[in-house]
Amino acid sequence: MPLLRADLHNHSCLSPCGSLDLSPAVLARRARERGLDLVALTDHNSARNAPAFRESARREGLAALYGVEATCAEEAHILVLFAGVEEALDFSEFLKGHLPRLPYDPRIMGDQAVVDAEDNILDLPDLFLGAALDLGWDEVCREADRRGALVIPAHIDRPAFGALAQLGFLPEGPYAAVEALRPQVRGEARGYPVVSGSDAHYPEHVGRRPFTVDLPEGWREPDGIVRLEILQEALAAGRARPYWETAP
Image (cartoon, rainbow, N blue to C red):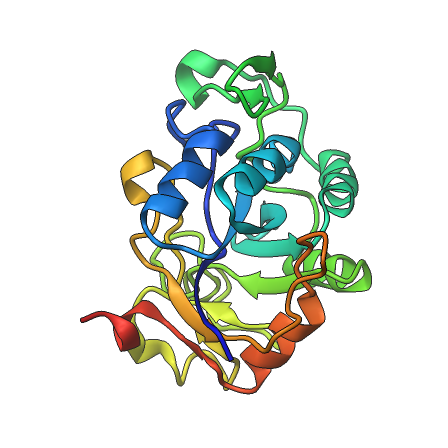
C-alpha cells in the first residue's frame, strides 16, 4: 500500500483570518513543494474557492478534497470534507443560510477573496464568514454526515475553538477521525483515530503538520476523485499516523 502524506486542514484568501497571499494556487504549489500527496481546502464556513483549488491541485499533480471548517453555535470548529467540488459548494450554500447577518468591515475583520486558479479576484463577499453559525455541534455533524462527508473535529486540544475548550469534552459523533495538535490527547479523543493538520493561514504554514496514511491501490478514481470510503476505512483501521509519530 502506498504511504501518503496528507493534510486536511488548510485555508485560503477566502478566510478572513487568512493571508491574501495564500490563494488556492499558492496552497497547491506549496503543498507539492512540501511533498504532500493529499490536500484539502477548508475555509471558514465557505467552499467558494474550491473550484480554483481543484484546478490548481490538478495542475500540481495533487489529490484534493474540498470542504469547510464550520464554526458551530458553540464556537467550536469542525472540518467537513467532500470528494467533489459540487457537494462542497452545496454544503457551503446550506451554511450560508445559517450565518448571522453581521455588519462587515474588511478593514477590521479581514478581506475575503473568491479567486480563480490564476489569482484573479472574482468576488469579495460581504457576509462575514468567520462568524458562528446558528447550528449547534450535533446539527452540523449530523447534516454533514447525512450528505456523505468526512467529519473531523478540528484541533480538539486547542485552547480556543476546539471541542475540549468550547464544549468541555468531545461528544460522540460520526467522526472519521479527530484532529489534534499534541500527542497527549489520545484519551480525550475517546478512541477515535487521531490525525494532525497544518491549519495553514499563511504560505509558510503549508505542510507544517501533515499526517501519513497507508491507502490501498484504487484509492483514487481514474478521473482523480478521491474515494472517501477508502480513506475512511484506512483511518478506522489505524493506518494513519500524526506528525509527532512520523517526524524525524
